[in-house]
Length: 475
Image (cartoon, rainbow, N blue to C red; front, side, top):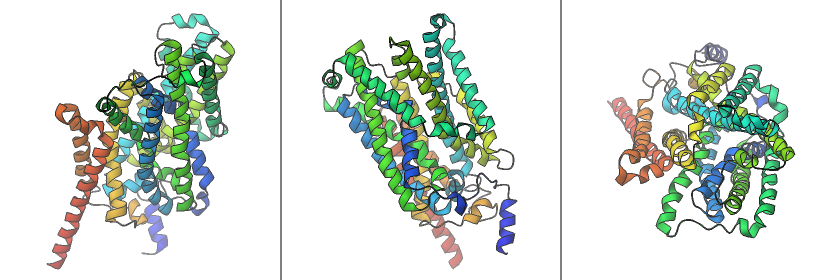
């Protein structure tokens, strides 16, 4: 078969569409700056602030919280860079890469798991945007506070704005992409300055002690907090090939990410940590939601400017971080019928179905329920993909076969059941801690447990399969 015939066959395959195709040489122009800027824009967001603030509300002092955030992001940087490699080498997005380990159809299992988590994050960001609109209206029209279901109404308004942007096309907010991080950084600095003045300086702000009196007490909260911090970016550590497929080379994407992810997350988290510590001094309780905190400001001008800034930045972050990946993942379900845009609309509706208002009910639901829960599924997917690419295939993929139904990644009717079983074992082991009190630590370490169990199980199953094929060949 000539290369032209193969190209024609791939393009006509039901597994192909232009959005899932390998990046062309012309598209691969992202350098160190682009990857650093990507992480600055994604890390400087309201949820980073809230993650850090939730650690203070959970009982940590500022030093413990900063160390937890930094350590968690250094840990998640490892699978992030490992999964970045095939994207940069072959120019393929996450759902296509998953076909190598899960099979050309089985990859939908991994893609849908990742997509559902992104839908949840989309809903959470939309709820935060709705909160900002509600607080803005209450500032401009005080009677709005008495409107029944006002928060839900504002959530739907902001949700519809997101849907409109997705339908019209991502290019409609490109002008916002360059200003979202600076805008939120400005809001963070405003909160920091306010807290400094109201609390009486950094001394009182940083004097709030840890609520943990013994190391075992601290460890009991640290483990799920660290797991949640890793889980915060466990989503992007899977679909990072969606971005690194545009890298000029491996070196630049590695340096850009390694420099920006841990540092930016820690620095912006520090703002959330310090301001939340200050609210303990000012109000006697930790307020972890910056929108709620801003609503307490006495200056209407400061409130309006800050909330409008949060709205614009949240819209941009939501589209960039929580629509791109699931849109590709849903497109992978039926490439010929589901376009990137259709996948984006599906994401918007799923964001409502996952009820974000419940996920943000309190810090325990956010860290222990949401972050820890989905980490139990995404850790195993990461373990399987990394094992397959680096250990089983030794970084060599046959890209053409990733788009064909009868290629080497067909396995059993499109599914690699070894990967599916390894995923079930890893997730099942991590979730066992929810049902069996004596092994609750398995759930506290859900991402780590799932990753390790699935990595080992997949390796053992694939090696056994290779040995069986070798024995059959010898006969």
